[in-house]
Image 1 (cartoon, rainbow, N blue to C red):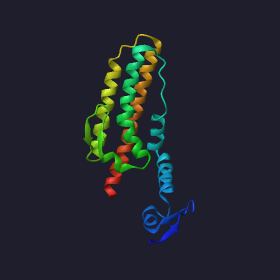
Image 2 (cartoon, rainbow, N blue to C red):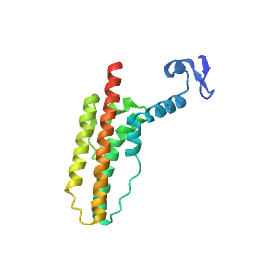
Image 3 (cartoon, one colour):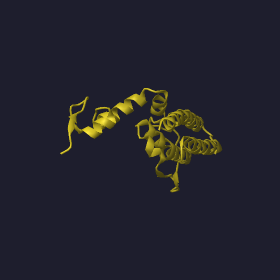
Image 4 (cartoon, helix red, strand yellow):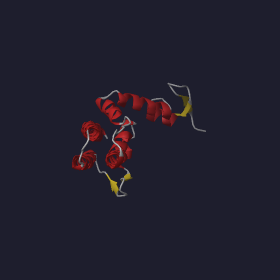
Length: 169
């Protein structure tokens, strides 16, 4: 029978091997600590702002177009950033599937950055192509463009985390 020890945080019984890998804490405590630590960084704060639910005030087709662009960003870019936010850095480099069904694999931090920035630029250009006729449509378009800008800042901060992580691996 494998030797077990007590988690430093919650007193759960864990394998010695797990304790050695996680600094003496169980997996739930380990991931909680990572999420808490990352949340206190500029990246964590920027991600949390990006991730807030967004509401468009426009009705009809214009709202549908904005929602499509937002869903595209959330499914492709924000999900990658979410993996980093939760401390699952390696998931960023697994075989992934984008919203349009295309499979891809990111090689390294630089490739991650290029991939995200290309998607943000596409979202920005699609948003700018929309003809905003009412005040509400203009407000919603501006809000979405601000979200894209915030995501770009968040991607740059995530890139630094991944790049620094590659240096130490």
